Structure formats: C-alpha cells, structure tokens
Image (cartoon, rainbow, N blue to C red; front, side, top):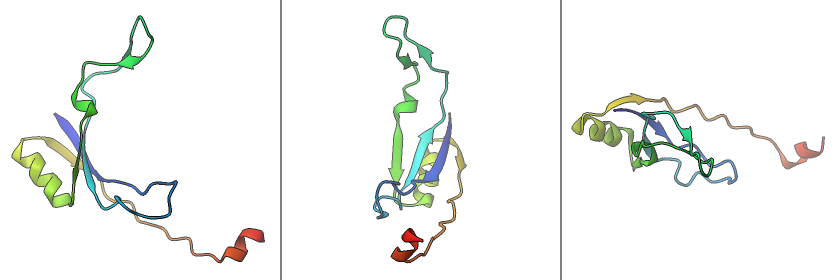
Length: 92
C-alpha cells in the first residue's frame, strides 16, 4: 500500500486560502482503470483510490501512516510566489 502526503493547494478560483493549511493522505492507484463494456465509463476495483484523508498537520498525517503501516512519500510544499502589483498595472 503506497500513499502520498501533500499540502492541499489554494483554490485557483478564489483569492482566499481557506482550507489550504490541511495535509492530505492519498493512496496511489493499485490497478489501472479500464473501460466498462456497457457504458464506456472508466473504472477499476481499487476502492482505496476513492479515499482521501485530511489532517491538520504534516506530523499528524505521518503519525497516522506509521501507525497503520502505510508506506508514504511526503511531497514538499511548493513555495508561494506573491505577485504584488497595483490595480493600474492591468491597464498598461
């Protein structure tokens, strides 16, 4: 069972950062998706792919994974780049 731990990114459609402080534990796919012969939808028998756990801190997510013997890869948080500009710069 392989999983990755990462910090949830900011929603691109909103200016606020609500919920971006949470750390997520997400399982890697165990099997490839295949097309359903009747409907054509993509699906698989991997039920862990549907599971995403949220934690308040990185340490809590790592502790949970160690407690249950989940092999994890911690993804570093990308550096936030602030683009500071005046409103008038939109019209230059």
